[in-house]
Length: 309
Image (cartoon, rainbow, N blue to C red):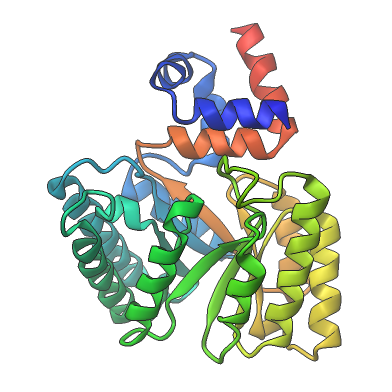
């Protein structure tokens, strides 16, 4: 727990960013989790997944948008990516994941409204190639705004998905609001540093919350997206799907790029829908540090690599 909190703190530290980004050994581990820095890299990774019977959710990394021009650039990257996926015939096998902060929601003034307009442009591009968009969740201070934005976007694009984080104490109640037909919910554990007042801290508490939320989603009328690498939670999800009579095409499992690849292929072979979260772009530091914080094995590998460097 302590190492996780330190890593999450480091994800917001400029000094730590400089140290990690400039470390010669960082690149090898980054390449394990990040598809690359360019659009071509993301499309190539998507093609590789689809050939193996998997699907993708592509995330153009960028959480530190500081001006309107940067937010417009993120929007344009997503719309360009979606057009490219359509041209290459991957539209139905790959959606995109979008953070409202990357679209300028935190810029102040009319930032939230402008971010929503940019998100609408991304949704329109997705609709044009027959795919979907999921709004990524960030720390707890963004939850209400993200859910409200998703609700607004669904007026025109009812397939817009949203992420809920089981470590937040509010999430079970949020799930109950999203059980209707057409709702797409990606359930994750959560990867931000949060205060005790809003979040469960113990692993057991987070897992129990995850199962409670998962049960609600499986019993509801929407489309659950089960985002976990935990074998026990995967087994519970499969059991709940069977108990509620869900066909395999009425929910999906999601895993991160570069993690448990054999398990991804095993589940796909068993007939499950598997979507791989594929991040790309140059602003990879915050994402990378959260992946280290989530899995001790990743941190151990990184520290050993630093020692060898």
